[in-house]
Length: 286
Image (cartoon, rainbow, N blue to C red; front, side, top):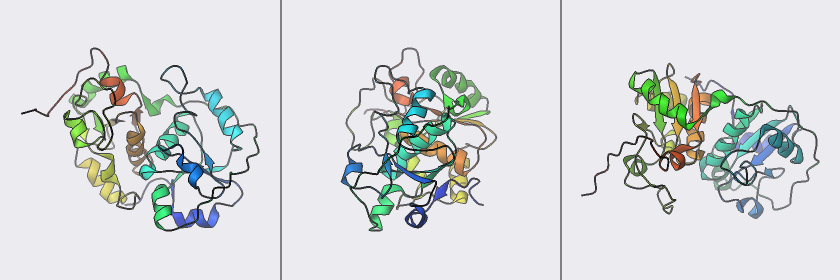
């Protein structure tokens, strides 16, 4: 079994082709200062929060604002955009999902992300990439890739009927309700712990090898299929703020070709703080 889409490039490929015409590298890290300490030659930086989020309300910038951002970064329609970053490509996957949601084409991830590039002792530069701004065409959003809170609530009935699946990609302790944060991260303000009723616990990291690359298609298919998350179902993935679930969304939709996979970007930050949302909690404090 092979991946269904040509959406991954190796570090070898990037080393050989990053200077090719029409190939552009975009680095997206959790640590927004990491880029300045060294990046792949020719890469431009995207700040996942500062560039993609509205500054006042918890919502994304508009499709028109995204077009303007891509133009300021010197990206052109038809360019092949290679995304990579830290944390095994969490935030690069988030950018991949957000750009796909807005209709951007020709996207790929560098398999293994920044950690694999660094582990292989490949060159990083601190010289800023010269950018020539250019107009970027208008974008149109694909709402079939995004799930909203009330859609997720309605989706619980589909899960119960065997027609849908919910994938909670957080750590087991987050899923059980023992903690409301990722391991080694501080408590982050969620009022209630647990998971959405009917969700299956499939932590995002189960989809990766030790070097941050994705497991084989056969391994991934067995991983999700073994939890009842199959291609015939309407699937929604979530985590805390959607970066880890973007990674799993990428696996399910882009690598395995599941036809209907949505990312719930409100995720547990919204659900765990919302009034009237049902929650299951399996952890018992004894």
